[in-house]
Image (cartoon, rainbow, N blue to C red; front, side):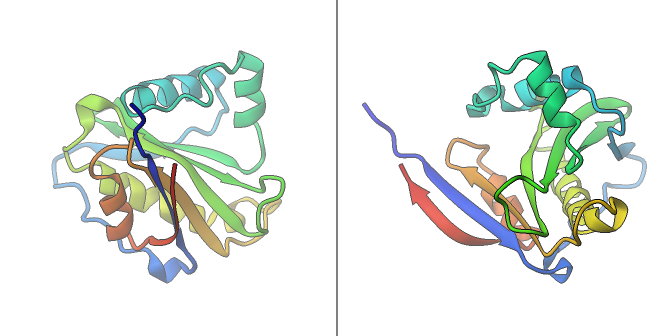
Length: 178
């Protein structure tokens, strides 16, 4: 039995496209912090834990050195959401990929650990991560200014993923069914 998987490609073409989510309620200790020291182990942990139940498999076979090469690339940033000091999810930005449009920043991975889903963290994390994608070229002078922020999601991702992206101002520019 084969199942059709729909993949949606979404984009923003101006920082003004970003529609911020509500801030976390006062008293909730939710912070989004950039992992400034590249760590293959941390990136692998986030990727495997967030993606385990939504079929993220393309990087599972990577060696430590492949992870290291990836996280040390100049255009890669990992931003982690914490709730009361516990990692709750992450967003990975990637700019300057060979063959990509100059000034394009991909939200390569975004998601929450299973126990943190449905708790009002995802919209905030996506807001912060998208804003950091838009100012990536300003913060990293070796990169061109950001002209476009894009991502893709599919029907295997969480049930709220596509709607969260749309609520943050992303527009579908391509749909593929396989």
